[in-house]
Image 1 (cartoon, helix red, strand yellow):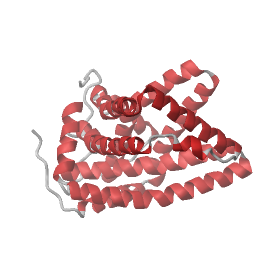
Image 2: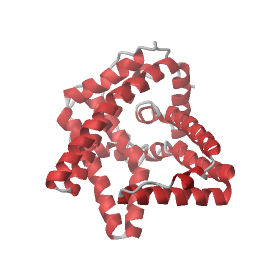
Image 3: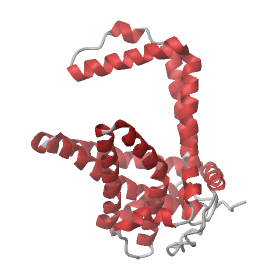
Length: 295
């Protein structure tokens, strides 16, 4: 069983500061990795718009690859902390780590949460209730697109109490899922753990240091909300001048170019304090032989 370090609540602020420091040290190099990921996502979206079936297949592959790509971001953030150069190919470093299956396994909490959310909604509302909810959502989307006013009577027919209960349970499940994967990716990469072991380590470490995790998430929201607003406004301005496509492109590139490196730096710092050696900047992780395939 892994040794879990106890850290003060202020450590949550330090994780965020370390993430910001890594981004400040190499903004272009780390930002390029996030921008490259954004371009891959937009390319898949364009393929899906042109050909639905191949696009859905590519979307599934990209979704499965997301923790592996994030592992590349985490590895790049660690290289920056160790004063090593970062190149665009580092985004795909997770594919060379020999830990692909363990990294993909970190998607399991999200998949289980999605399945549980669907089953719970069906149990609370029933088949007719779910159909009614879909009708109301479709009505709201239609009215929003046309600029019309939604029908209050249609919305009032929904079981507000059960929907609120479902939403609260979904939020609770989302919080548990986030704790399971909080430092799971760096634990797979740097701690050489298997996927399930890394997720349970992450959950135990977060519960053992819950005040620090709460402080981190609160400060992260404070940092990200203004960023989201500014980037969205900038994207709208560009869309009005140069077209919607360029606006969407700029918005996604800026958001992922900043948020992903920031999060990678934060979780790398958190892993170092919670499950690694606090205060030590570890060198870049050695890559096992390509034939290694962790379960």
